[in-house]
Length: 552
Image (cartoon, rainbow, N blue to C red):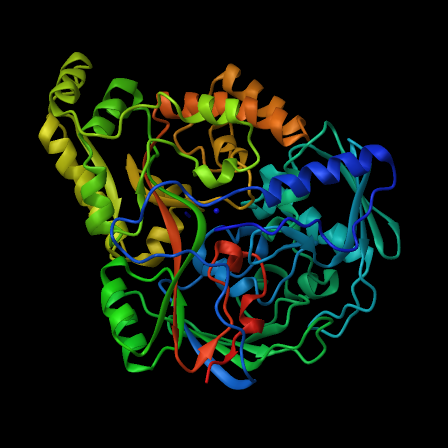
């Protein structure tokens, strides 16, 4: 699933500390969100100057069309953990906090959030916010909505965000208090993601098991769910009762185009007005077409090989290390990412470390495993591990060259060192299911994974290797690693936290828990008739479509 050119140094407006301790913690969070910079290195020859947004819209428009590479299996916010779901849902359902286009935190449905002590977060809600079903938001809706994330029956993708939460209570008609079991620097940041979405309790209960798939979503965003033609399109209609600035388009239509060539051709012909996650093989065509503009923004994204099974040959770290040594990362960046990327041996982007002291940066990145191929050393490791001739299965999908060519590159690397890596091609929707359905991962050893940070903190990614973590598909378990994750989460001060996270970054890299390949910016294409969309990964968790309007 795959961090901002320059961050605005600001604290969320309307937020204030109730005590000196609260002010200190909030300042630390603001510093974390404000200090990160762009990835180091170039973009492989592609003109990929990073920006936070596109020019503002000049006027309202009746509608615009947007491309999706896969249809969301559901729009239930509890399982919104991949690009297709969040690209749509962020415009319909809103969270307590919100990302800005510069990836800083600002108030969302909560007008302020304060923590009078390290174990307490108090969210004061906006008044008069209406749900799409006509009801008015109250603290009870927030308690209910957050509670759905921890209900085992929902199998929520965001459940681990609440692992340190002891209770969530309404402490006033428009106030919710969260009590923690232990200090958790990550929890308040996650309230800007789908983990912090608020929906109408009555609306969700009325929909029952059909919530997220048919009918409305009973949320508060500038758009509400309209017609959903399965396999074809999802329409969003402007919500005239929205509490914030009215959307500039009366309707946003998301077209499901699973074939990357079809998506590109639809943009070139004007059938589609825009889209995120542009197929890398289409960068040049779109940039030179004259039909619109191709933008790049911060993505907080790394491209990796996700190791899903360590019971077979990949259970030996020497095999994982050998695959890493045999992989042609530079070739993949050039061909698979259209040159718009940077080779890396780290699972975290450098931009996520913007608040880190120099000592933590050195500890996190200096001396990481090499990224240049060394075939002879890799062959020796395979032989030493007794893995010569072993068969491994890697999933691929025709989503775009970034997925298919990485799978091919891994297969080629395996061939060069004596492994038999077989590719299993699945449809885009089935590829999305890898993230939420254990059955989709049965018999699979690896798959390409572009993972974006959901918050501007390295721990967002590194915590995935803690025992029992949601994305810990291979079941990695180590008490030392788990203890470091807990220590980092408990440290509110960014400098202190990132010294600990640096140890985690090295451990994850040295053990090849996933195989890191490259950093990758966000891409977005806009036809000349529209403008206003953010270029950064902020589109995943803010109502980006509301700012899209006339470009001419």
